[in-house]
Image: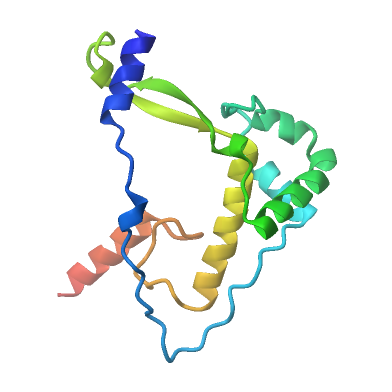
Length: 175
């Protein structure tokens, strides 16, 4: 069964041809924005992100579960902040952070058919920490500089798709 799943997942996976990516147009000419600036990761930021993690999540290829990081948060925050800052400064992510364990997640139907499973990638929890720190930095910049459309509700703090739905209903009932 494992080999069948591997063959099926490989057959439905497509690689993007990054050589034909479109050129990004400049949309902000004539407008003044604050400089995004370099993200400097502090041990406090790392500790906060670790404490926000759910401890029951699966580890990636490195075998480090969130629960372990939560148990050693005070000891690991400084070394992780150092590694994260070096990675950001050099523009290099350790290759091990790019690896994933692929596990099959059953959807519905017959458990004997490969197409009734979807692949789930279990990536490095440490890399996810860095990704979350970068995301927070980018979203903060976009919000402060009003670069996110006010009608955007998904993926923003204190907003949700439900908020967007309520706004939509209010707009519809005004007619």
